[in-house]
Length: 217
Image (cartoon, rainbow, N blue to C red; front, side, top):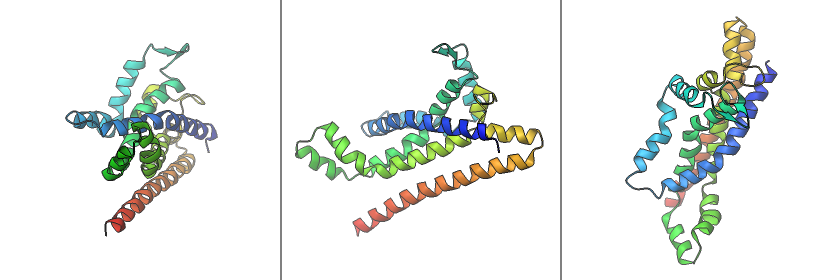
């Protein structure tokens, strides 16, 4: 088992989640206010779902090449794969939260406005607590997707042990070196994490849908 790659993947997933979650909540909430431009913005944010990883990786490689942060080159560095991970995970961090905000009964918001609450108070005291299922789902999906990301991370970061060599890249390297046992163990780990993540996500939204159905009867 490649412990170094596992720890690096967990580190990447952790920082991706910490940095993208507040932004995802803000964007998801702002999308509710858009009208004509909303489909275009949603389409742009969903691009990482449909574009091949090699295409995204190429643009990241071109865009980050020669750039530095605090004197550290972004290409073939942890900072570079973190930036790439943030952009690739935008749909996973935004869409579940957006759907949760959309599911809030407008009458609740109207009652809060009539009661004299400010927009910030409504957001903090009402909308955020009611959207918690979507937030949890976004966290789970973002974390799991980051652990399994391969193409973009490989193109931007390469396979530097301890710096950019994540679990998915370690699996590829083990297959290339005919270490099927090692590749199988790491693959099983990612499979288990992905299954748990999807089950949690479906469980959260399934329970939410069930509760809404009972409330409407």
